[in-house]
Image 1 (cartoon, rainbow, N blue to C red):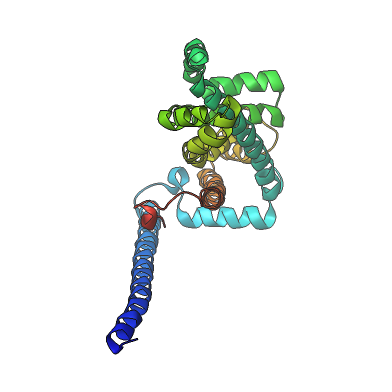
Image 2 (image 1 turned 180 degrees about the horizontal axis):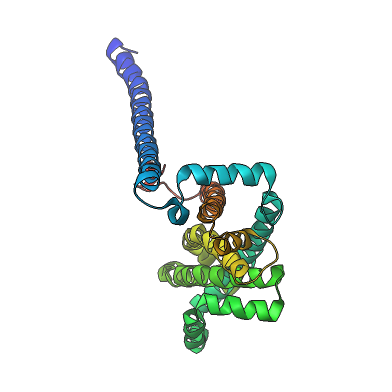
Length: 290
């Protein structure tokens, strides 16, 4: 091998590694800058709220970050007016997870089924639209009457919110499958079930997973709304009790706990999505995910 060839080969091996390190370094700098700005915005917001509530507005109605922090510390160390904070979190989380799983399963199955059957879609369309138009707070009140103050009524409310969020995405994902791909599979002898499991469902996976990110938030909302309507345990009851006693710090504290749960669930869903979609080629926006 000549000297020029050896040098060219060495450069070819070095340049990709150098470029990869440069890209990773730029990504880390960008990520660090984004988190710095985020933290600065939160600090600025909390400081302005604290100062405003101290000198300009009545903290009895608007509370302030220091009071909310003391309320959270009190809940997690001494318990709440309704018992242990962990018991309230666990109760609401059970309702949200059960409603999320049932609603997601029903939404995926019916969404794909109606998405692949135009006749069934045309028959069911007005009924689904009518059901989706019913205010959820009304349904929550009905579910309390039907199922009582226990967990069942909250699961039903969460189920309804999750179902429609997942159903419409699954329906659209099933409709967006490449028709030529399905025709080619049928020419090669694939039956309806084989086409459904190997083409339609994988193609709709991205649509379904995208809906799940918002669906768990809806499940939490459904559980909390159900508890707010009528319950004997849960974060919604805790917030409702704080409202009844004009404890604005308690309302904010409950909102923060629910937000943290939603963010943790979002993180877990993102990890699951990345594992399930390893087969998908990276898009040009992959580098923008943080």
